[in-house]
Length: 291
Image 1 (tube, rainbow, N blue to C red):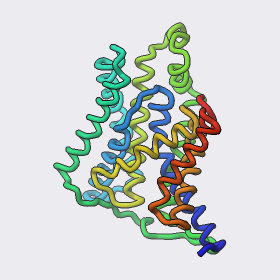
Image 2 (image 1 turned 60 degrees about the vertical axis):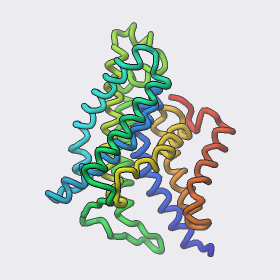
Image 3 (image 1 turned 60 degrees about the horizontal axis):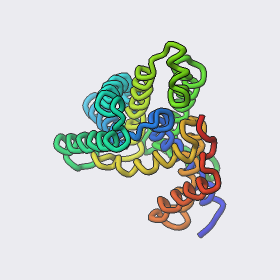
Image 4 (image 1 turned 90 degrees about the vertical axis):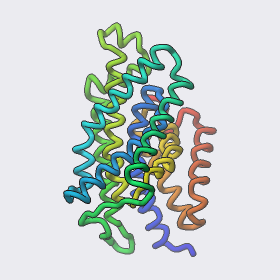
């Protein structure tokens, strides 16, 4: 039954959900949007981040968000190493299109199997003082398990946007996908820049994983649910556009929430991807085009 209260809560829930989706997609906005590397293993790294948050929270009581921030540098170095292997094995020889995709599929499969062997398929969750609490303003609810991830994701997006726009390395990352030769003429090494960018993209997965396990319990294969959504958000926002990615994530979150509220949860993924198809039919470059 339709009501103004229900509509307002659905919109707010969609905005909060979309904020979390932005944290999931921002690494792909860098790696896929800027570097044209189809890293389908990105959600698997998010699950690793979630499990690290679970381990340190259950054993030492660390806040999940703090764990994500502390784990980000380690994820950066892992990402840089993975890109080096990817470059030497595939990109340098021009085999990145199909063989590279298979490589990342293998990485995703290995991560998932290792987590299953160690932790099984049981769902894991974390404890924090704000999980389970809800703020109410008028007739609108703001569950903190969604509000905290939204705030952290918004801060992460703003930081990445500022980095990409106002630092030499950030501008170099944008340039490496647009004009590699011009970048080389400026004395920059495109391979090192792409390695740095890939590491940065994987570093965001540590934070996204800590937010995921705040929202709800996780198990090793749950990352598959976010592969399509993450790529859809990057494409919908415009390849490489951080601002567009965030707006697209909010749109997808609101559409999913509205459909789930008024038509049922089973319809929300189909309708959300229908919005993507319609947008690309009318504007193939996405909302903001390639940066």
